[in-house]
Image (cartoon, rainbow over all chains, first blue to last red; front, side):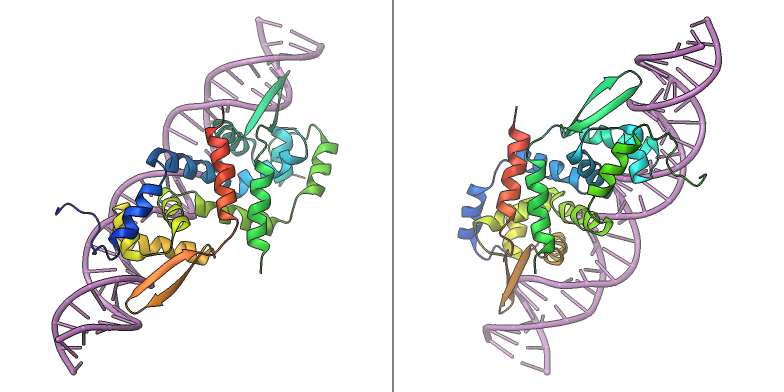
Length: 117
Length: 117
DNA sequence: TGAACATATGAATATATATTCATATTATAG
DNA sequence: CTATAATATGAATATATATTCATATGTTCA
């Protein structure tokens, strides 16, 4: 070998091989990490929580979180790209709302973990 | 006011106030983002997926993922701090395993989202 | 048409974080 | 006790990303 990145011996080769077989495809794991990355930011978490109550326009979200319109808009783009929010335009105003049914359940599972013990 | 971070007008003050009331505490939202941040990295996702099958030692995980022992150890520390993995020592070898019952469900919800449509 | 407003976005900056490298710690075997 | 192996960890580096700033785009209304 020689070009192994791993700098230690395989202690349990059978285990490693068995686990390797059960691992999902690299790409799927990458996408999954990318998906959770979206939830890994306080601002985005707050936006999502707000939208759990009702749809809101960009200004309202900025007011609610006391943050700049620009930063909210940037984060809404991230949420949009992750297909977590959708929007509708009404004149000058753009209303954002949630576009995923799993969010609440994912949040609840997360809350279960952090409030546990 | 004047010291408002938000640079736009509140268009729907009633909505903002209503949503504000429903928002969880700042600290909880921060903790939740911190929790999901742990899942937002491919290496950690892979480690967790591996441990879903069975407990593994550091070397085995490094071999499995073809990464250095050090980086795996660093990431295991993150997972440990997030109370997502636990470990037991057997001589020189340290075995890691999952320490949370919600992980599988959270992953499944995430997979539902990314494989949808 | 043009002024005003809501939103979007590119670039710059600041900050967070993943990996590497070198080395420390802990345990076993001889 | 010493050499070796498995793991842990601090510091440095490289990379990702959140926010800001300036400005562009799109829409309404006078």
